Length: 360
Image (tube, rainbow, N blue to C red; front, side):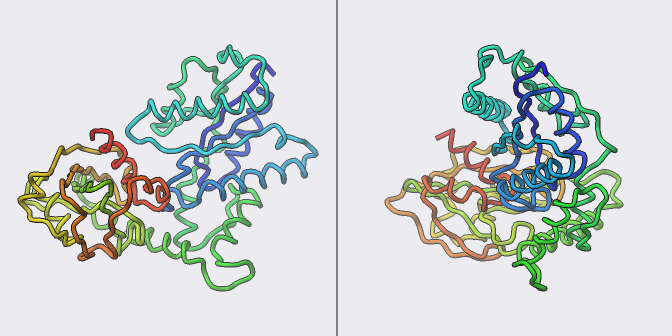
């Protein structure tokens, strides 16, 4: 073993035989393995249905089951860590990866930690655009892994959330057991988990969206607006009434209408959803900037590009708001409490807010 610490990054939504194969192969080339679980602080959606703790436990159970069956002790050489998404900053994301690596190296007292090229290597198979991150660490080594039977989690999630299928050959027994349990609110209960039902509803909606646009000559691109409204150290958020993202918190916004400019759509959606007690003229005068957010995977319904506007209200107190239209609830949140609801926020809205607040 020439590598002290291998680093395997993935979302494991869900953990399948390809992931298990990669871990076993990596441990043949490194003494220890750090598994960083991506999208750890995102709200549940059809692409990321399970949270960090659920996936960590799933990984641990699968490795323990493998050790028991094959009389090995691989699980004792594996460490885990959460990894936050930064859709609009590779620099921040790579720094989080490096910080996690250094923490584990310190934990296991690595004597080679000052020469990372010899002691650390990134594990992975360079399959498509989603694995471009493998090239972001030129100072670390690489442990290439072959793609095991071209396994992909996407069709597994689709079948699971549309017809409840769990008996995939691609899934280890521990993963199949986890998926069965997730459908239930409690063990041995016949009724379904509300979170499973919510995600199933989202799948149905998104499949309907895609079917409606299936025969267009080009894939559709949707345009939306989002208002990041700040006043007295607070931010205005709405709780979504409908899927996708039902019950999640979001910035007020919606689709741009055919005959309006983005600045007009921004204020229209803000007023419609929150009934904010401020004149349209003052809102218009309080717009600090507009910025485009266009990550291809930022939304679940398809390619959605949003123009977010930062609005700072210089008022002695936050104006009254009342939920309306697509909003279930409108509320002013203390900015310092925003991180507490990061995993309850729709799509990339938390990241948009953080990005725009950096301009204040």
